[in-house]
Image 1: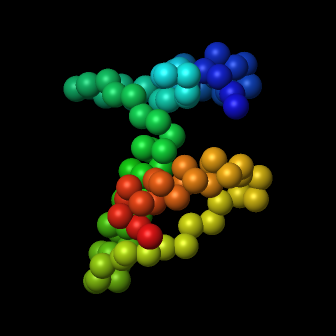
Image 2: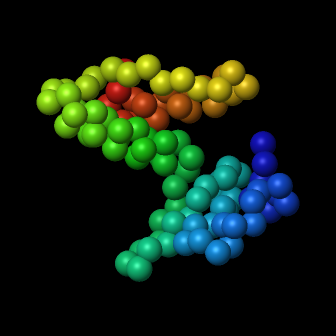
Length: 94
C-alpha cells in the first residue's frame, strides 16, 4: 500500500483542488471547493461514482436499476475487491 508521502504518487495533485492525505492510517483524498473542504476515502469516491452511473442508467432505461456487473482488474487483492463490492452496495447496487 502506498502512503500519502510516497514519491510514486503523481505530483499533479499539488496543482489541483485535491490532496492525498493520511487519515487513520489509510489514504484519503481531501477535496477543496469554494464552500468547504471534505475528506473522502477511495471507497466513498467509488460509491459516489457508482451512484451517478446508476442515476444515468436509470434515466436512459426509464426504469430502476438494482443490480450491476462491475469488473475489477485481475490484479486487485481480495480487500480491494471487497471495497468495490461495499461501494456498490452503498450506491444501492447488488
